[in-house]
Image 1 (tube, rainbow, N blue to C red):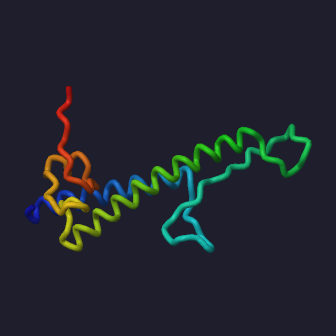
Image 2: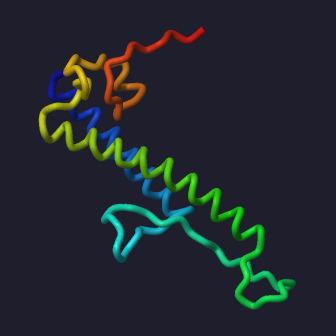
Image 3: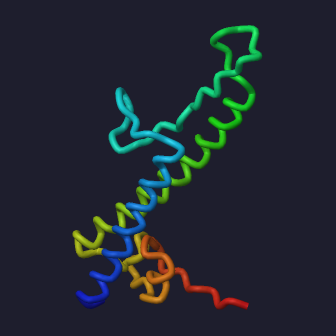
Amino acid sequence: MDQAQLEEFRVLLERRIVELKEELGTVAKPDVGDHVPGEYAAKFENFGDENSLEPDSDSPDEVENYEVNLAVTGDLERELHRHEAALQRIADGTYGKDLKTGADIAVERLRVNPAAETALPIKPSV
């Protein structure tokens, strides 16, 4: 892979990382405290259930919203980490290689998924 292609993929990865962090910001916030740096905590939004008999109780809508945020946060975090790892592989000089076999990943596959970790063939669209 030549330098122009590596630069193309670096730009694609960096753009997607920005997008992922923006998406994460809608459902989570950076986790602080005793947790792993770079991780996110799903937001728990208090809707202020005025009909609740208990002042600090969580409404079903709040819990459901949190469960959705939690699932989406996990998916986005995994994708973010994959893209950050791919960017690191560019810096390390190992980008474009299958993580298990070391085989070259097709440029066409990387254009579809710049964070690809395997050299699986692209299936033609039907």
